Length: 154
Picture 1 (cartoon, rainbow, N blue to C red):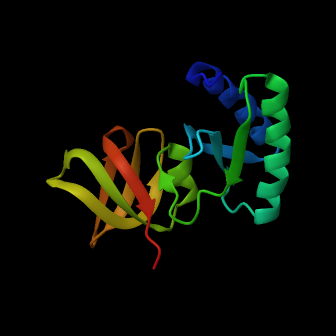
Picture 2: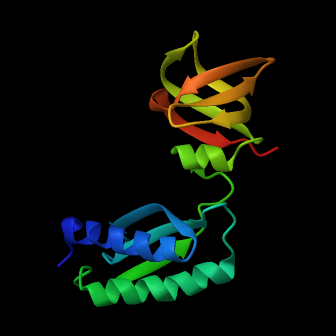
């Protein structure tokens, strides 16, 4: 039987395994596809970014074994391990740190210094905020007001 609570129990198991191998769990999604099968979608990346296709294939086998042995899936499922891609959303302090010196677009939950969107290069990050060189000025944006952010690919 498909139970969301059971599948949520899989997350810490997968996170721990990935962390031990130098990867991070970027996102975990589960849903039923058009044939009513459970799809468990895992987005993984290296802690510094840049996972390969071969690594995804290897992780698909390893994580599949973990899910099978946990008994939490409860029925047949499809496991899909993949890279978050170049346009990986930035959400955590670690995400922003990994992108220092890169150009990003940041959308805010509320106006900061009169704006709700900034585009610029990340110059510094700490536990409270992100510093951007944006349009010939430096702005420090608190992490807790960032709604979403993405690297700008030129």
